[in-house]
Length: 345
Image 1 (cartoon, rainbow, N blue to C red):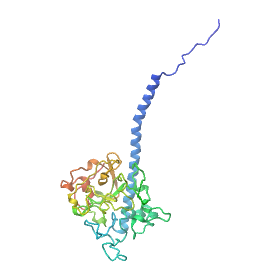
Image 2: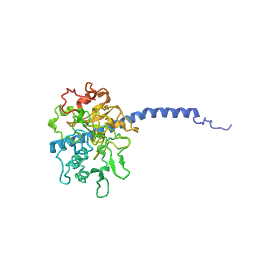
Image 3: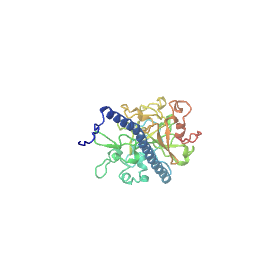
Image 4: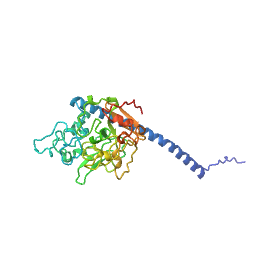
């Protein structure tokens, strides 16, 4: 009798079994991806806080050396196209080349932002030293032909910014690098409304001794994602709305919305700290602080500390419109006399 090996069942997975395995793998990946995204966002938020911490330390170093915080930017209040109340520019006016004070360039450079002025305290001397503060910021170039205003620095851009270090480009080739961080001008950017009551605004020269609400209770810089068309939110220089730097280099926590030139800003509604969207064809989200961080944004205070505040710290009905000021409004003023409890979010 001849011996024969026992036959084994050698067929593989059925189609149904394979589909079940694929479905299980898909479910596991679907459960894992949100966790991975949360970890990545947490890391980006930490890096964003580090950016703001470096910026706040640079601002404090500037104040220590110059005995005042830098202005949001500088303009001559006598210019015919400036139709709102402003303080005289720090350092006076430069009348050497222009006898007409309405046309004179302010000393220390018009429209150059506070971010440029603190650049030497952030190891950015290379950019700062390229600038001629007696000239207009829009047409200055480095020796290699690179537009100075188009040089992008990572420390001025939130790591969660979906467009990365994008640069706005004009039809004539001029450029401007975007920023995620704007100086807090107070409740809003208009003196007529009682605004310009923060630390950094147009023609400001705030001293640390003038922050009578306490440096740990006063906002200095907040997040605001650049507009969809990249025309609002620039690093080195920006005229902003109405040439006050509003929405470009500074922003109030309850900023006045689209005030026509020469109009009374008291008649304009305010916006507030709330979520925004990048898909914003009218660029209306430029009038309020917001970020790509879920649930809120990062803020730097005048004591150098950095905090994440959720949107619950603010609301639409606010002191700017005659209601009790919100906690964020109270934190925005340097000398409002409000009692603010410590905020830990």
